[in-house]
Image (tube, helix red, strand yellow):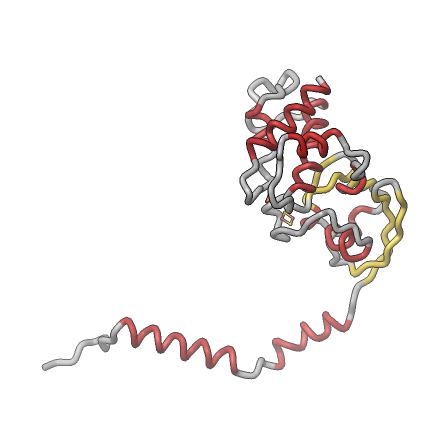
Length: 215
Ligand code: FES
Ligand code: FES
């Protein structure tokens, strides 16, 4: 009988062969040409000075230019209220306010913010003098584990300013008038802040209350 053009192997044999190949690759010594650039990059640490204000206090830091604003705040200034969730711009836990605009601090380099005014959760209020948004989150149970909460609160404070300034969102119907303070607007604008505990409806209640007291 003629043999098949392609040898027949079972699925189990294919998986075993794949695993063996992967193990061989990972245990093989790395090629010199691949390690050389990494070693030289590690040896040269490009440092730069940057000065900015955080929560009203001026700071001058000498940073590796690759340091994100999030790491500068947490690791260099020890302001650990701002949280690192995904470190990829997908969860909003690292939201801070820079020159009046909310940004994901994990997605921006610290040295890009020379002269900026940065506000973190520590700069909004204190345990004894809560910011109205912090008080509303407490009142409405706008959190459970609290990990996303600093980012949610910074984001919510900036959202109300955006609406006040007439900045439209994807759900704004009339671009010629100020956006409404509707739940739909708030949900859309807060959609970049993920809460794994699912406290969304309470967060909307808290933001709505503060928005109402401002209107
Ligand atoms: S940590 Fe920055 S968006 Fe998730
Ligand atoms: S309160 Fe736990 S992730 Fe939002």
